[in-house]
Length: 212
Image: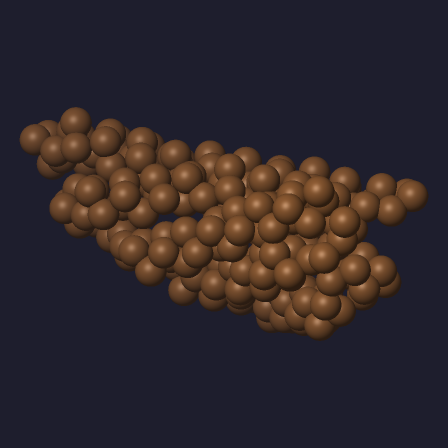
């Protein structure tokens, strides 16, 4: 039955949001090469959890997409956008949380000799990571916008969830116009926590769905 499908995908979506919150709590602040090496294990654990949450979220969003599916099937566009965003997040987690600490660990004994080269290389990596973060943020916001409009329009689940999604969009636009650094650690945490709460509420709404 559809209700069981929505319940399972709702649990999956809630689990994914919970893992995302844990990731942000564990996420270290970074710093110098030596600090990154010292925090390597913590970085790898945090980013591994971030990658692990992606399949749960995608399966959950698949259920949300099906719940809001209408004749025009616009909710599928939201799913495609969210998938693009989560794929970008996975790449960022790989580069910044798994590859970088391992790479610096391999050169730990020659940091002083190759410091200038490593600075250029790491700076290039951070530039790529920043671009991936922007793709993640924009793609996720666009997906949430579509879901929120459909939620308000169809009222198949609580319309307040749709209003919450629009509120996140408004604050994101205000932040972008005022130069708020979404890709800084604090800015990214605020964004992820906000989105994670919206995703958690979406999961709960799916669990409570009674559609046959």
